[in-house]
Image 1 (spheres, rainbow, N blue to C red):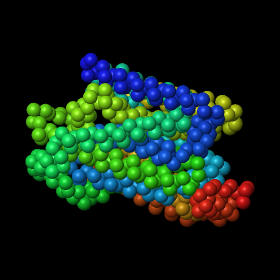
Image 2 (image 1 turned 180 degrees about the vertical axis):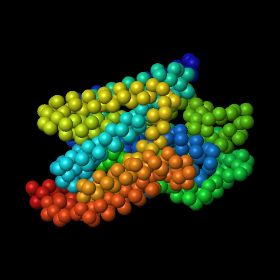
Image 3 (image 1 turned 135 degrees about the vertical axis):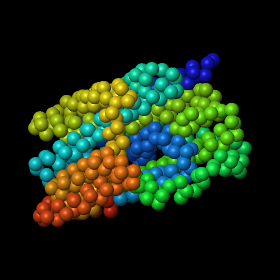
Length: 503
């Protein structure tokens, strides 16, 4: 049987499994709280794997190994920054956000939490946050569909638009019907696939390159200008700081924050952190090891060429494994892409329905109607994303480069201040949020600035300063806000949410 047939079989099995999980989740979705937040019933393991899979995307299996392959361990500063940021997010933000969002009128989205927490009756804060989420995530979803189209084009030689529609269509279907539950449990399967693939490739690779010592010798044989084993060779201190600053983005990523909000209790964040960070550390080490093994393998086999360093992981999988197994490794790359798309679709839908439509409609729909509205939101965002993704070279997709920094700089400081500083005001939050987002866009478009420092750093810092200063000038004491703040803190301490009415 032809190798391509085996790979297609593996891909069909994977796609069918994702649709099956989506149908299973459909049967368990009865209201908007289920559709957007799984009824706050996620176990720590499910939340952790879901957060990891939806966070990493294809970058973990393509971009990161490619960066290591070219620049050695110096490129690890991004991974180090992200790992530290993820740990801090799970340690400090997860338990308090889980508690506070339920205490504060059972908020099921990040914008609604901001509004409820800060008692913003003007609705401006919620609308601004909702628009930022909708705009950035529509581009994010579009970029994921482009990645899917390019993946099918590269792996199977298909037309770009066919691959894009397959990836987009399957992801939209299981997200459309399964909602947050469907997206979350498909993420779990996808997270396990990603993890297994990243562990298997370097382990098998070492047996092909002659063990650790021979691998190191082969790597050193091709290392000339850059010491591949140094965290400090190959760039400046400022470049290392800028790369590590990616970790700041975690505090403001809505598709990760909603996983914290969906935990069963604040106390579950401890187990979630241990599982999530273990998954992340081992996966990142697997990506690094895959790149290093790839350098050694291609040095030992000069008759083989690697035209694109970002394909080192895929090339090794196809060389080392039976075509059927290699097909499942290819599916793991697709899983990384699709898990991120599905998570972003749900958050985009919640922004459209929960944070924008309800404000305009000014009426409460029935639970069934709310779920229909949620699915309509997924469909609307998906259609726009497909239109944007139809041309893989569309200049609109350039904005995706700002998305991580945009969310981190716009929402990160506001999330932290709202959870840990009782004197934050709605005026301060709005001013800081806009400052962070605008700074990222301007800074990122000026090469002289973005070439020196990643735009999330100035955006995050300016947001923090502006929000603090404006809040100091606009703060007025509120017993209601203060009492709610104390209740959230107490809920984190006990590990169980105690609502004000039950005290």
